Image 1 (cartoon, rainbow, N blue to C red):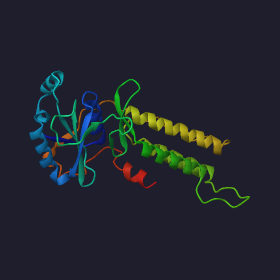
Image 2 (cartoon, helix red, strand yellow):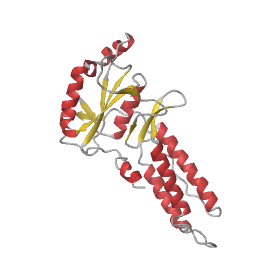
Image 3 (cartoon, rainbow, N blue to C red):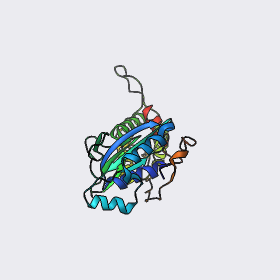
Image 4 (cartoon, rainbow, N blue to C red):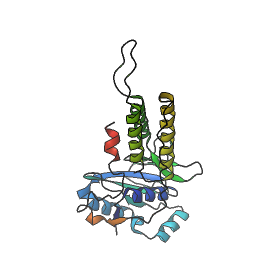
Length: 249
């Protein structure tokens, strides 16, 4: 049965797990209303999608492509599907690429797929999102406003206000899933926050960020794909609103 992931964490962990042996990916974005139809068409073209784990393992060992399908949680009225394979299928109509390409990694919402220093696969915050958060931190701490007139000090938020706003941002970051790559990025943002704070408020105690909890591997949370049109916004993960918040910065 074709299924889709109903939480962000479930979908991200599924892609990261598959990418270890099947790093080639083809991205398909379709309206939610056509998701079942498109997925069924892919399953007919690539029978391995509905095959057993044992069969797919045997195909890979024999040097044949073993295509798998991951259907992400819907984003508004659209849904992203990933065809993932150990190699590019011969005669395929899709545009395949390396999901772990360091220059152009696979990116979904606020996340980019990446290899860890030890050779594992995880998700981290995308480069654009990390840059947006760094700019946001700098503005919260150093203040806003135009260029000051000659002899005037630049406008800066009162220390207690800036302190609380940084803590609010830190609490907001705790809503991300604690995957190793994301945890590393949040830790680096916390260090950047402390560095900026100490350079601009040397006599004030810096806002201490909490440590993003580690998210262990969880059992996939999925529903039948045929039901996706009835539950297009079902997404209990805490980071579902991150795109809107960072994009507005």
